[in-house]
Image 1 (tube, rainbow, N blue to C red):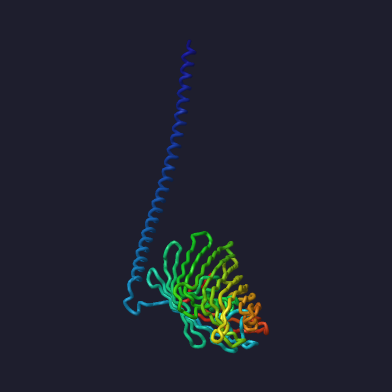
Image 2: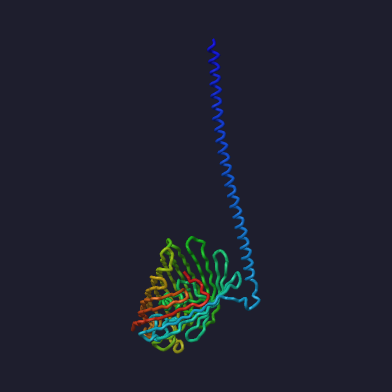
Length: 464
């Protein structure tokens, strides 16, 4: 009987010991949970503090941006105020000076593009030995927040002054649109908008000389739209009165529009080292009494009708890792195709015999320019024309013979040109060029050029 109480006491003692051990474990667990909660609370507090700091910085940045916008608006408002004194007119002014020394095997006064009606443009070179090139004086400035004006005067070597550009264009029209009005170089093709000091060779390619008289100018209105696309995509249209070849209007008596153009340009990057641009353009005009002197007959002829020109252009550039400072390569080419039809008057100041005329002509040029070390470039260009076969009613009906139109005899003028230039800076260039000219069937003219081109004053970035 005595063993039972002792057993019961031992059992109760063991139970108490077990309960005490369990309470200790629970206390330890609770302690760990409390420590974890404190740790998480500390982390959350730290994150909340960082968030508060970031929000304060963002708020400060927004305030600074707002202040900057206010300052910009105030500056814009001050710019838009009417000019109250002569000192308020502060345009960007630049001057281009150029000249050359040429050594020509053949008399430059006899040069012609056989098979093509003369464009009346600058068929350089103009003479042997030393020649003063065309100088350009440019004035440009923002008129107000909406408009910008540009005036480009061309001073020819014969001391005549011409207005090459006098245009007004919009600023920030919105939705990718831009308008230009006045006199300007058309946006067709690639090279047409570039001025002579931006050319890679001393003279314009043969297609530009034959079809546009070196460059197509407009007196009218231009609209451009830059599409919001991942690649560069630009659409443009122009409408104008006749200003230059081939849209020549000798009568100057017709109202309305006599020429129009449309173009599409697109381009982009291929990796970090390659970039490209291509385009298609169309130009149409209605020349009236467009005269030309036939050197073979010493008389004047006139053409009136329609002229339509299609163009395709492509440009590819390579620069290692996008850095063109040390070395880069540029490949460039354009193709032209023109169809003209209308009335051709033979000896317009004499017998004035007229008949139908039609012809389709084409031409292209391709060139490569490689900068092989800083400031030094080497280039090659090949250009070629196809005069087509002129359909002359006066010849077909026996009134006249093909010999009466010697300048329109079929031929394919061509040239090969190699150049080396040194560019100490973006404002100066010295160039040596050799050209083998086969623009007339009876002779090959080997030409050597030494040219300088200098830019003074404000000088904007060149076209891509």
